[in-house]
Length: 266
Image (cartoon, rainbow, N blue to C red; front, side):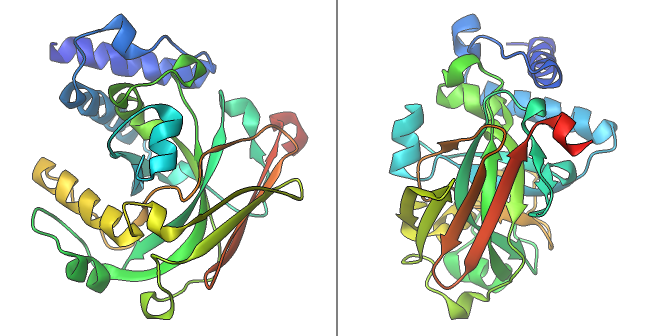
């Protein structure tokens, strides 16, 4: 595919988001689409966002758990960019009107004290670079109609990124075993998901290492202060206006995301 083709595909995804009008799977429209093409499409969008004044404040690793890979029918992780406007406060309702088909995922977010850049990053390097962890709920959404995605579709779509809600109590790595941390997710007072930190590539730290070593050769550094989401510990949970979702992590704390119509926030 040519750069012009990839640029146009990126524009179609941006338009789908702006108009809340999902498009057909890219891999159906462009059967020859490769994973390399898909990451190029993602970066075309990021460059457009930066030109509009948006700022990259972190990255997410997606599809790190068997549960999520099975839910979306893919077989490997991916990554996407998190911009400043994607971060929401716990106390502020999130307008679902700006989304297409949102879901939430409970994650253990890393905040970096030092930059990380691969290749060659080890688990020890990652531990040294982490300042603290926070409970998080990632909001995912698909600009691809009906979530009919392959790995190339979701990569091109910025790994289906849409938003993040972070808890407010930082926890140091030496105070928690990330692999065995249990998580319970409540929606409307009902338990809708359970999981453990080890669902993310065996440990969220492994996902952080994978990300640093994957994006490093592309010239991308995980900067100090960045928020890194290492992947969900449960399957994704659909949300609608009026929903309140709380993820509680043993030893880390809880985080709540509230969803509403845009008009309810005026």
